[in-house]
Length: 236
Image 1 (cartoon, rainbow, N blue to C red):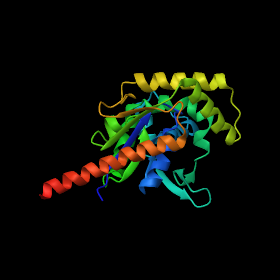
Image 2: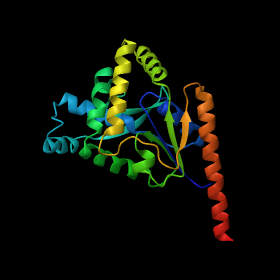
Image 3: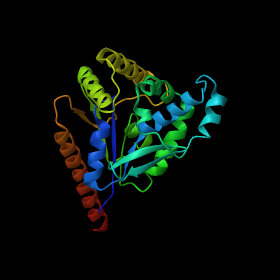
Image 4: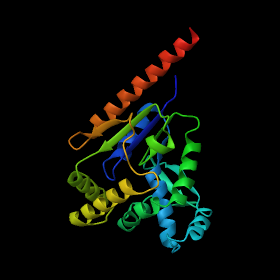
């Protein structure tokens, strides 16, 4: 069967990562959470007191950052490892969320991680979500999704996610954090969040998770079928 790249972009806490994981599982494709990569770099910068306005310091720090993903055998999820340590839970905490958009806006950071992401997708058959996957990382992706949801609904989802991990944060604080991240993500000079011209727009404010996954898998199947027909036409 032809292999395709599924690129899912969207706003913070709109559920794109959860959807992407389940789509990848149904397609039997690897899943790459690029947001986790930027969070891991942010955690390293925080822990090592890296000045975001010092390019040499940033580049030196990036040379010491190694990010990988390993499947958790008990939880059945892909955990993020930073320099050999499992940081999956730590990178989801609020203090990292408050800084990740600032770190993600740094050109040197984006260049380093985009290059790594592109290497991951060389063989296709991958589902990747983030902010610039369909516009910068894989502009040639066969299926591009742009996902969003109402701001309040996103904040409520984020609050539930934090509560499940034992972190209590007020809804107003989460709303302000999301507004700040949205502004930075859409206004940064380097690879701003935007919808690719050929991306399918999905507002999942009132969609169930199953409905989202079913829609994206159906769109992926259509693209795989199109690739099959093109391959057959080339052979004819």
